[in-house]
Each structure stands twice: as structure tokens, then as C-alpha cells.
Image 1 (tube, rainbow, N blue to C red):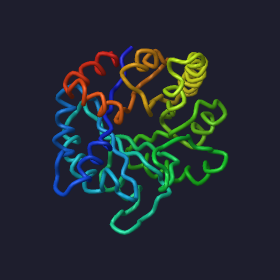
Image 2: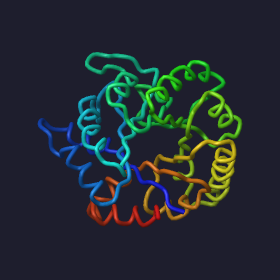
Image 3: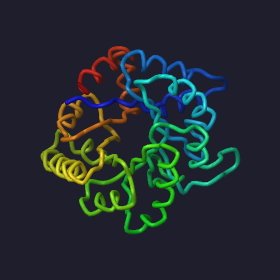
Image 4: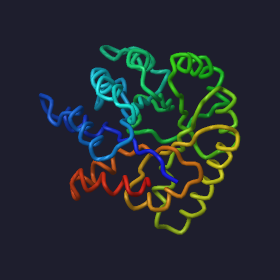
Length: 249
């Protein structure tokens, strides 16, 4: 079974933003990733614009849209509204019409995403947002923990896919309990597939732990950015991408 590799460009944008100018160029880096086998490009534009900016989303959309075999995925908190020059996540999505929108319950002060939605609290608010995005022909994925009850609620509010939060698996990998965490993810993925949800995964996946996580039943897509960027410092981008593409096949 093969699955898609979507490369998250946030860390490339973070590096660029540490200096004036446009180096490294996010769009050119995306082109290289695609040339080396990426099936998708992911960005997570946050209100503080510490990495990906709204303009990056526009330029990357222009790059990816003409490519029949590459998808554009914009992720973020759908409840983040306009702040300064940040127009709000939903406006960015509506302006750029990505293939997929991955909705994530992170807050502005979080260093990174670290938990899935609690749909008992936010499901009713999310439901019309999901419908609006789907009416725009955008596939909607919800960032979720491997909780069967919550996954049932993801189906109920209209999501097309879930993205399993793999941070705890990655943190445990190589220790005594990683297999039990993976089994929990496998059960969640199997259940999601059985009720008609597609399964994506992401967060802290890398070349080492992907050797095991790639066995997840029904896996359709992984989103990898931080580790891929770090591993490229040692191996080079081409070699790193070659290894990831092989794992995804």
C-alpha cells in the first residue's frame, strides 16, 4: 500500500523570516520537493506570521494548482480571525481554494500543534465551517487524537478525513510503550476507515519512526516538515526526499 507525502514548508519560511529578503525562497523550495517526489505541499499560516505568511499561500497555490498529481493543503485554526495583516485562516483558505483544508485546534500562543479537537465542545461550531469549505470543493480533514468516540463525532460533523496527531507516538518511539501507542493509532485508523473517513497523519514523524508508522492501516497521507528539514541538513534535500518517498511506497 502506498500513501502520499505532503511536505510542510513552515520551517523553511521560519528560516527565511530570520533575515530580510526572500532566502531561502519558499516557492523554489517547494518546486524542489515536488521534483524529488512530493505528492503535496502543506502550510500552516498562523496569526503571528512567524513562518508561513498569507502571501506565501497565494504563491504556492499558483504553483501547485496546475499540477494534476500534487495537492495543496492549508492547515490551521478555523477560529483564528483577522489580526493586523493576517486576514484569518478561513479567508486565506477561501482565497486560495486548496485541495485540502486541515483544521487544527491550536492557539496563537502554542509553539506547535499538540492535541486534537474535542468535538463534544466544538463540533457544533465546526459543522457549518466544514460545510462551507466542502461547498467550495475543498476536502476537509480534522486534526484528531486516536479516540474512537471523537472520530465518530468527526464523521458526524461532516469531515472527509482525520489527521491523527502522531506526537505521542513519535515521543515514545524506541521506548517500551511505543507499540501500544501504535496499536491505539491502528485501531483508530481502522475504525475511521470503516465509517468512511480517510486517514492522514502528522507531527514529529521522521525517517526512523516512519519505518513503523507506515504500517498504519488505511493511511492515505503523511505531512512532514520539521524532521524533513532537519534531516536535509545532514543528508541533503534530494537524498532525504528519496528516502521518504521510498517509505511511502
